[in-house]
Image (cartoon, rainbow, N blue to C red; front, side, top):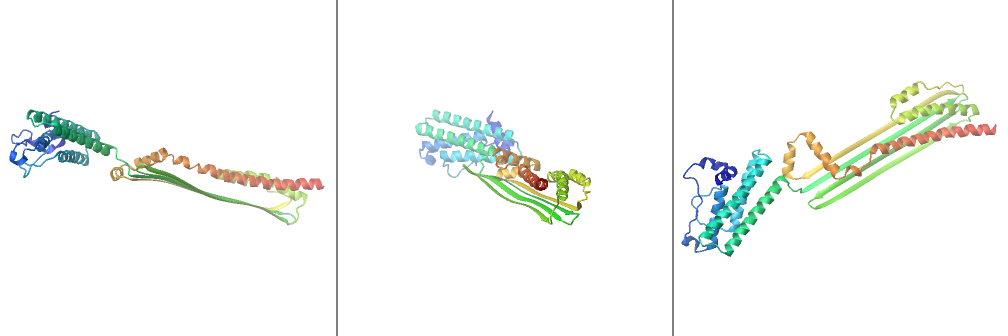
Length: 366
């Protein structure tokens, strides 16, 4: 790549001056009065001019006091390249273009250093100190370009937090009331109320990170059978037989199959000489909530993400949380809720067994 091409890539404003004979041409003036025979300043001046020529850095034609040092050269080059690349990025240039600009800058730097070194050797100004200074400038410039490129395309994450939480509550209630022909009353009440909440949070700040997991749960179970009166053998048997049909309705209801439960309840056989009245009250309340949050403190990335489609943001959040294993910290809440439904089945088993035992006891007594 020629110097003119490097100039146009890094400094488009100089493109119109490419064919102008009066275009800027960095020069070296060896003025003993200005430099006082300081070879380092002369070498720095020459290196600065050559880098300016290679990269297309515009400089004033006249300078009040030509004081240069190698550190100033490094800063001058890096400021110019960073400014050109950042402006191109702000103008919407893609990553490939930005990488091409950085590649051209590296070539220009090496070209300027090579030419400056060659001319200094020819002028007998070259010595070990100057060679060391030029090499240090080259190393610092290339390191600065490498660091800038890394920051540009792979910005370090200053702070990140991924949090997930879920909550669920389940309440199952059932009440069965029987009134016998003799006026005896039997009431069976079942209740299972439980709630559970879990949360996990992963935070990273630089090289420091931490994971916190919390869990809380509560459960309340109640079961009661109330008998007002004295049940005879026929009444006990009638209630026991009816409980078998009631179980089918209740099992379907507490399993969430509400349509099936309603259908079974509509064909429930409650005709009995021993039972004159029967009521069944089934209730189930479910509450579930889940939330995931992704927070990142990186101004550049946040600005870019603000213009991304919403589905892309959600996809990124999901991917980050999954990668950090947050999902593994929160078990399936529905599996936990199924435990509550199983508890109601156990309570119904107990209720039915209660009347079986009464029936068997009556038979033995007879």
